[in-house]
Amino acid sequence: MERNRVLIATLATLILAIVCSNALCQEAPSAPIELKGPTTAAVKFPHSAHTRVAGKCEVCHHASKPEKPLKSQQEACTDCHTKPPTPPVTVGLQAAFHNSGATAGLCITCHKTEDAEGKGAPLKCADCHKKDNS
Image (cartoon, rainbow, N blue to C red):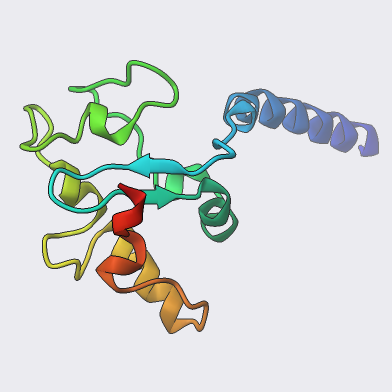
């Protein structure tokens, strides 16, 4: 009976390692990425700070949709989220991060949550969209 448990645990660990190995091999860039918008100042986005908070890539990076499959493993948001959005994509570049009033969306909603928890995430537009980033 104990031998069966050890065998099952070993097989489960092996399967988990195989399934997760592709995800674990992907590394976030060490240097900040510059996100340029058509009407606002660029944002220098430090992956390392965000991965410490989010914990896993899927919090920010969604899986591709069948109607618009990924071209590469680490595809830029702007490859699909354009201004205006190009069908079949319905969400434009700005809306991929936050709505036009910066009241909700992937970035600002998370920043508001982190700030409410006392973590001091930037909330004002100019905190991220700095003119010297352009």
